[in-house]
Figure 1 (cartoon, helix red, strand yellow):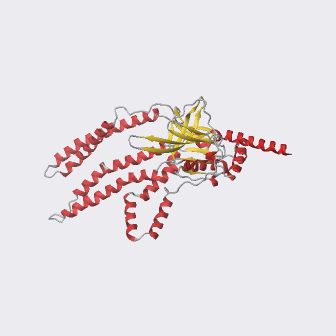
Figure 2: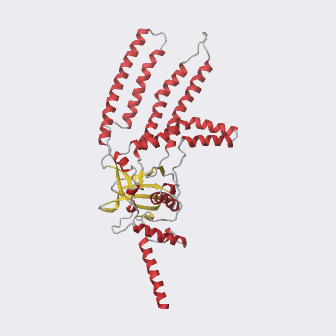
Length: 441
């Protein structure tokens, strides 16, 4: 997922207070090296490609960046539904058919009933747990939003504060409560299976265990109701920091992590709003692992093209997680695959409930993720009349014009160095040429 940094995080491992963020700067850090892309988000001549599917939503006025494989989370949760159906069908009814009917021609339904109850008590809770965990992940990774009409960036961050812990609750307490509750439910069901016992005795057992189940339900329900209200009150709150687009700090950092027997290289694209009193620390930031500097430039160019040239110049969000894309893939697979591979694919689709998973994922992307955003962000994202649109600065326009001519001559952004030095060298060369011309004249 997109990494969101708190206000006390530094941009990287470079502590130099006098360091100035400027496009084109290359710097060596303790962990590797970095290339600065902004402030002054100049054109890089890279191709705009959404390499890591960071673009989640795009409109005429704003662009959302939000990473995460939401489809996999939905498939994993729905897998428990398939496991439950398989266990009831194969184990429950399979055992029933193996035993066969009794002397009176009656089928023993205890095995299917036992598997049904077991899945309601085990598979269903786990499936619901992972489903709601996926919803929590969507709400916990809010998007970074770019508004091209205002030429501003809205960066999410969580307010300072310690995460609230539920009182008297930990992994051990959760396990004990779960086992006790499941055991009580089973104790309510077991008396109905007793043979040879009087109806009064069975009723007495059901009354005792049913009362215990009601007490447990009331106690746990009241506890969770009060605890989650307290948790919601004390948990950090989501806020958005707005910042001018042309002053946003952006850089690509390549790090080398060396372990006992392994050396791994990680390349990360980071977007950050610096703190007013400490330019080396981020008030809010987001980063994505891009794999390579070239991929980082392509990902950055998607954002820059949207802000400078409009939504047509920026790639559309990937459709891999939409229901329409899934249906199109199924139709294409039916045309291209032979019968056996196609049947194998359909079995896998059913096991992971991919049709339903795409419906859930689309809902999360289009509804759930936007529902938790602050009202201030929604008002900030409202479209403006065209005459009120912010214009790019004259300095940025001049830089882009000069760079366009430089790129036509074969120069590359990754090799030109800091923009200020490149401009100074260019002006010096022009003065030298003009001076030589006057001397020859």
